[in-house]
Image (cartoon, rainbow, N blue to C red; front, top):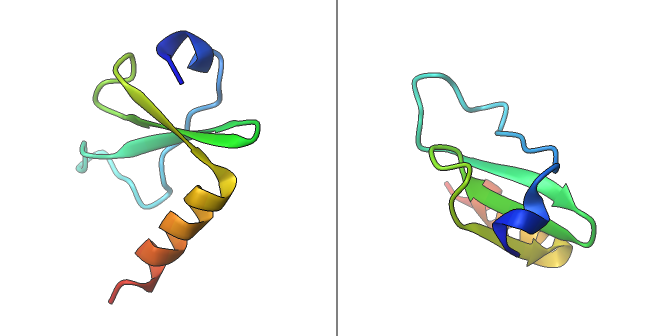
Length: 65
C-alpha cells in the first residue's frame, strides 16, 4: 500500500494514547485490509495487513502479561 492509496482514509489512534506518548501508530480501515502508519510521520511509509492478520496481532498483544 503506498501513500497515495491511503489518502482520504479515516486514521485513528488507540484510545489509550495520550499527548504524552508520541510513539503511537495509527490505523485505518482500508476495505479488506487495515492500514498502519507512524503517528509521528503521517506522510511516511505505511503497512497494510489483512483483517485476519490484524486480529491475530491484536489478540497476541492483548494476551501479553
